[in-house]
Image (tube, rainbow, N blue to C red):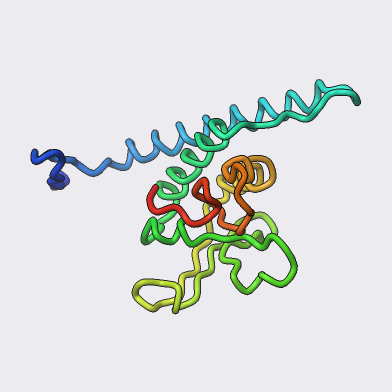
Length: 171
């Protein structure tokens, strides 16, 4: 049985969109993971080849944004994330004292998303373990790229920030 098409209205035209099948989802996840591996390998190669007088590689906003976009797609494809709104709510602790607001946690070899009931639309708490394939890319993003997205804005701890440092309105 074929997957039913979803009708989307764009510019006063109806466009039929068929949800991706399992193979297409796998290919999308692999493409995202491969893009992130290339960026991480570039950083590793630059670190290995630098001398004491060299500066560490600085990633610009375009690289950080592309990496973040691939990471978001990989999270949505590899995890049964109930809503993209959850990704907008992800925060990390940037200083002692704001851990109560933290929603993304690193535990041993994986990441967990924990959102309290009052932070979810249906008033049910969210506990989601991210796929282990995302651990190294998330580490790299948080340690090396996230701050490049802030430009001159203060760091509020939002994992996928808008250029003003706050939560993104969309993905």
